[in-house]
Image 1 (tube, rainbow, N blue to C red):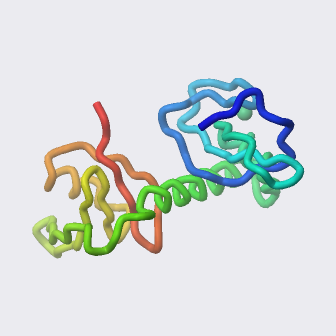
Image 2 (cartoon, rainbow, N blue to C red):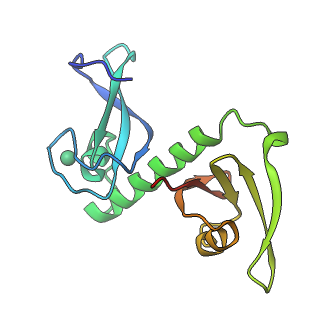
Length: 154
Ligand SMILES: [Zn+2]
């Protein structure tokens, strides 16, 4: 949901990441690897819409000061991915995940599947996940110590 034009936002809150939108709404920079979805809040803390900023502008909007520009951007992207992963997993009950043991031939890994979503213990099993399922997946972010993936579209 987007209310446009925005009432003058005074601060922003982290909502997630958007890998499809690659142009920063703040500075107009394009061909970015992703954008960070921020909720714009007015002076009273009311949500006045959401915006998609590049990593650098998102870091600045959220007041991130620690580290180099790249460190700030990387940090903000991971935070955004984790927020996105939490949003994706939210509302799916434990009983709704199919628990499947997958293996690279050496040691097994427990994977959890729910429709287009998969959870694995760490973000290093993408190749294994794709080989076992025969389709492409995209890493979203980490949630509660696990890596969350969604089936890649197209
Ligand atoms: Zn920007």
